[in-house]
Image (tube, rainbow over all chains, first blue to last red; front, side, top):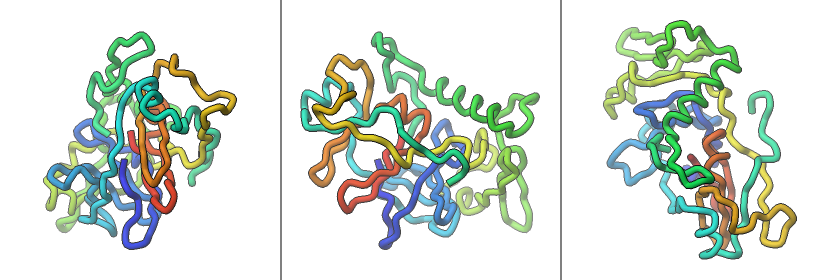
Length: 91
Length: 151
């Protein structure tokens, strides 16, 4: 999980349609900067090309686990199931 | 965001090759969007343009992406970008419903699914990995924090 705030600006991230070394390459809708988890950048997303190149979106701690295990540890947790809406024609 | 095997397990506990699943997802998305010719079966860029020191990769929607800096600064070779389905082929989740405990539809602990769990700014949420795999990104907000939950 990554922060999508940079210099007071909030970015909207999406898949660019590219992968690199079997890893998704994201981009932001606002500047079309490509974002990729470059090694040695503290696990964050690095802008690899575009107006925000060389900037880093910081990683935020998250956990991959089973639903039952997560719910047992966090019974107050909210749950996202099927998305109710996403843009049908562009953004 | 790594497409590594055994990141997830099926409902029966068997490991699922997510890399193969996601490559298949990318391929199906490309077919559905009618992006490009698949007779060659190669997933690389539709084209690579090198002009006056600038390197561009061209995706299947003919959108050009300048990756000159990506190569120069980070060693990312243009030829190793794959698929190039275009920015609208896999849409992020921008709007979704979060179920709270006690809501109709809130799953019991018998739900055999993998999730990404997050605790931030006093809020705790879980996102199904298989849904994230289809959309790649959920743009979320936890209080004042704007985050991307990325598969």
